Every structure is written in C-alpha cells, then in structure tokens.
Length: 303
Image (tube, rainbow, N blue to C red; front, side, top):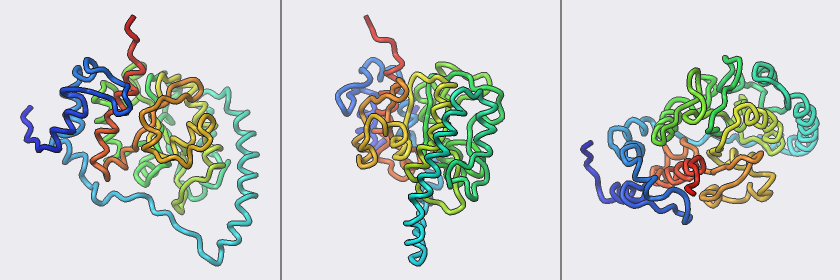
C-alpha cells in the first residue's frame, strides 16, 4: 500500500502501534500484538481513501438537537417529572421480573410494544439488531451504543449509515464483524443501543428511562453471553457503570477510558461513539487504543 502521509499522520500511525505500541494508561496490548495488525491499523485510521469514505457527510453530522421546554410549560413539566419517574420505576420493576427468563422471540415482541417509559411516544419502532431471528447466537463482543439517531430509527438497526461504516471498519481491523446469520462466536459483535426508542421530540434520556431499558440490555447480555463489552458514548457508559461507579454521570467520558470495569461479571471498556469520531478526527487514535484494550481481554494470558 502506498500512502502519502504528513507528519501528523505518521505520528498517529506510530501511536496506534505500527512501529511501537504503548497504551495511554500504561497497559493494554503488547508490541507483539500491535505489530500483528499494522495493515488493518493503517486502513482504519489514516489511509486517505478510507478516510474520505468515512468522513463523507461528517461536516454535516451534528449532535442531536435537544429541544428545551416552553417556559410556560416548564413548571408543569417540573412538577410532573417526579410522578413520571415513579411510574417508570414501578413499570421497570415489574418488567424486570417478566423478562429475566424470556427467549429472544418473546423479548423482541415485548420490546416492540414496550411503554415502560415516555421515550416510546412518537417512536417509529424500537431499534433492535435481531428482531427477525428466532434466537441470538453467542458472540464474544457486545457493543452498546447511544440512543438511536435518525438513521437508526429510520432503518431499524443499530449503528447505521456513516456511523455504522466507521464502526464496521474499526471492528474489521481486529478481525471482527457484526453478528448475523452464520457469524457468531469469537469473530462476531452483537450491536445494540442503550435505549431502543427515539421519541418524536428528540431529547436526552432521563436516568429512570435508562434504568427501564436496562432490563432489556441485561437480558440481551444473558442471551448473547459476550466475553467483552464496548460501551460507546456517555449514556452507554452511564447505564453500564452506574452500579459500580455511582458518580459516573459527573465524570467526563475521556476520564472513563483506559480502565476495565465489570457489568454482570463481564469486562467493560469505555470509548468514544463513532458519531463523535466522525466529528473529532483527532480522537480516532484513542479509540483504536480502547479497541486494542478490549481485544487484549480476549487473548489468553501466556504462562
């Protein structure tokens, strides 16, 4: 492969492990492991044609608009939020009892008709990765993304269009692809969202809404039985780490990186969401470090 690299790109390539690898937090993948994947690393981060493809439309990509309530209705919303949270908590508790033993078809049907929180209002349909399948085969990787964006809601699948293309390239660089028919186990990644619904009025999910949808996530984890979980984005990290890191909502995402957490006994690595990486090219090297850290957790430890 012939690459025309400037100084910054060469520095990124070296940081990403083509020559010498050192994890930003002092651990992670060894130089031998990093050297085993030089071509993939280069293809993921700096090859110009791939970069152009991944960055198509990136300038137009914006964070979801968060609409503020009308000042006249603000007091009404404030007085009602406690009641809504209490109702959601009660519904969540009942839902958790029911889904703990569900097989995938029953879980998918429950998701399709869920009204446990107000995120379902105006939602086209919940976004799920396996709604057309009778079962969820096991996959070593489970990737949890942010609340569905417009493309995901329209297509009904997690990580769609440019965001999905970038994630697919990242996973391909470590020999992994999306879970699907005929693809399971060590080379498969099951993709899901931290919440499944995109409401008509786009907004951030509230903590009680994250808690309600975590019931589904817990069951997905139990069915897929992953060996490592990638939490991509702030809300994914909050949902997965809230029990072990109570103050997680106040910690910047960048400070959650480079560490290994546990969710249901499964190691969790926090990283940036691909939508963010499309807007912030400089953090792709850090995302690669996170991916290599996750990969290292699947490698057998040498005696």
